[in-house]
Image (cartoon, rainbow, N blue to C red; front, side):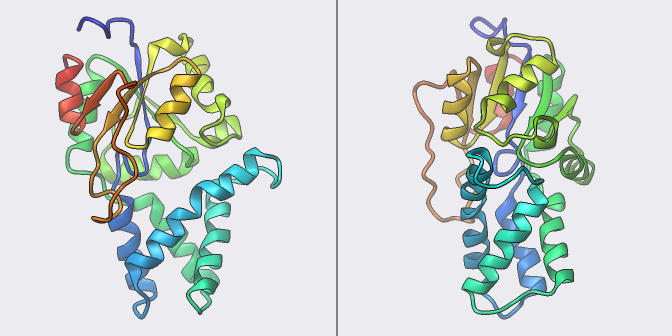
Length: 232
């Protein structure tokens, strides 16, 4: 379509954009710790996600895989809620991020988009985590861009430009697709195109801070709407 003929690669955020982390994690918390408010616990755990990765990117903490960071923040949340988790409980909860459910449009939408574009995961999860997630949900990725490939977390330049370099294209030929405006703002700052996807239920019905920006190239309701707008 006019305006997008130069785009070759679609790079997708996964947690929230492609998958419904709140439903998956709150269900897992409810099974492991039935006495706790699973929704509140899940919200608190998720809110600690970006700050601990920022500490890694600043050099305050050494590089560690996402599961290790999630384990640390999980125990912190449990302490804040007044209880402790066993190692087995913590392991099961951390690994539940690998089986969070897809949004209803995700798998079929990716298949539509893949006809015209190279579709890639570009996530703070590891390659192993994202592979398990893909197999669980039927995601037909061409490439899985996990944080352990670059040993950096978004919004670091190494993630966005690392994927472009891996696929031997200029950043301007990559379109970052996300429901988080800060992710898209960072990607645009490194020369990528951007597409915002509405996910109003990402936080289980709680209000979201993200509503998209006029600076994005595309604003779509879901992946099928994105496919329509990109001529797939």
